Length: 284
Image (cartoon, rainbow, N blue to C red; front, side, top):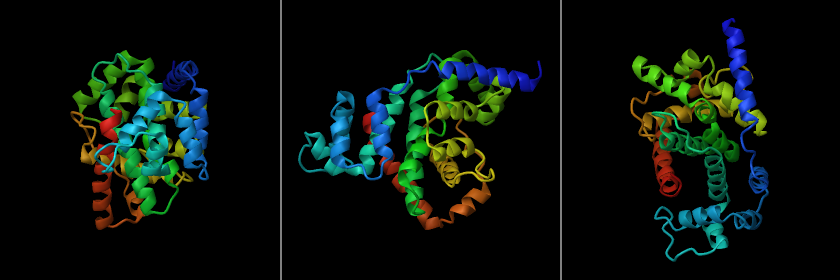
């Protein structure tokens, strides 16, 4: 069997496994559709949150966290929604839905906590960058949150092989994507794009997954370089707190395309860390 045939056969196996992944519950699907609607109101979102007790608890906990410094205790979803605002509520829901879809796998040395720390911080950073560039914030957060989602697909269905990937990465001091390709003949971009297709992610999010390591692909959505730079920033800030963490190669073209100056980046670094800490208190 040729390398191409082996690659195709691995992808086919992953496609079959992904089709067995639990689909998003109806309430979650409705919420995600509501979140992508820019005209969605706090009232309509609050009504849907109230249908999920676990989500309600997280929203109230975030509203009462020290980060927001509210003087009196927040006890209702309506109060929390008014305090946090539409954007924070939307982001919290997206994170909760996605974190709940993947159970912890029995894969040696895979740091689930570190994975979600990195994903949440990248989501926040991408949104902050997109705001600085006057882009659509909603897709930026989602794209940052899901850019590495293919890693969870691989580790969930191939825990033994992925343990080999991690060992190879550590022994050879290489990027994880290179270790995936060497050990499994596929990588988390392949797996992420399959899941994105299966779960009907927006095209902008698919492009961000596709281009978060190589944002210079011709015709790719403008979110790809945003997520690429956000990913590198979060690795550099070591928010995941993973051992042997490497900062991925940064595309000079992507960096230049964003056109942000040093002062703006310093502000982005600070806000990324601050917003992450607020969410970290309640999610992971």
